[in-house]
Image (cartoon, rainbow, N blue to C red; front, side, top):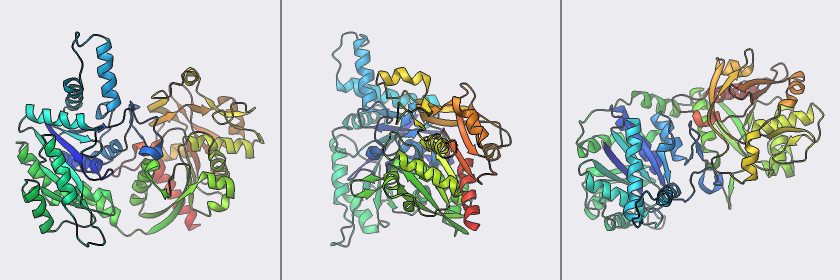
Length: 542
């Protein structure tokens, strides 16, 4: 088994995950089996309890793992599902080692960071590769070189390199700033970052330089001279409009060939025709244009707006729109602002999405958005919380249950159209929040003759879930009588999974308890998003 470590320098968020996935795609396209693993710095056991504004949208895997966003990049670019073996945190490592010590599994030895923490890291890296039968394991080291939180990951990298000479390469992804007052790119920050790696006993085999523009030869030569490397191992990765261009940019500089040579692998040419076609589709002039409003509650960070809290959703919309030859103008609408200022804030979009969320902050604004879409026949897609609040809106507006609510926000409501899943009550009472929701892929039965069936074109689908509350079956008959059909139920528990308005009442109004956005891939857009974009196009044309 071969190993590729990917580290970052100068700033966080530089693109290590996309780099790892892109390098993996090139090697996979050349016929090698690859598996990636993300090493996170935080003490959390997983990403499930982290505020999405704090660290981005936790990515939900098919097996229920709540992981870092980078696992989403791996899935989308590599086209293969990730599991818990593809994700580790410092918290997981410490807990495993401490639990072993408590069980006397170290036979009375004094337990120390080195070798016991580093041994556990190496063990997990190797197990991830063995489980998938991988030729190459791509190991993304979280954070930035020089941080104290990730030092044991780097030490594990050094030890593995020492034990397996010729089987390990190290890629350092770093930032090359171009200060406006100087007018030229500066290589010194990356030089110092490489110096930090050298101080830990690591000499990078490649530098992938992130910058506004492609590196010129002078900058490449400076890197080679001061970082003790060959010029052909300095790879330029400038800003691009579409991240799916990155594999092609890296391949044009022969990085996959150089990696194969350094690892002693047979050099094979990758077949990137499918990926080249995708990039052409993405960059092609679009024939149609629609505006989609996302009415959510996790957009703000200080004085700035960000998309990371709904990363999987934005990606899923992109995937569907590219294949539908449609340009999408995404309007991020604060649900709290809708509460305070009314539906005027939403405007007149061609479609409305209410996404995932928790708690009562902004909930009334999301309910207002669901009502607004229903009354004005605007295509509506409710995802998880967005489905639940659409049910609350319908109960209030159509069934006349003015106090209808979810017990998450009002435990004393007389009409709990959304209530807690029975087996979640004890967990909540114990404050057992981490990793205890209904998580991962669950099979749903889809009712024939419904909008959902016309979308999926089959009676059974598997959708990823991440929730504690559900539609209250006591209200199912009332909803159905007034035109809100339950078109999907879970196979094992008979929980309500999909609700939709009769198409005689509304052209496209659907809510799904699951999260189809986590399963969407650029080469395979999820059908519910493709159908939603199509409905938005129809609405625009009318």
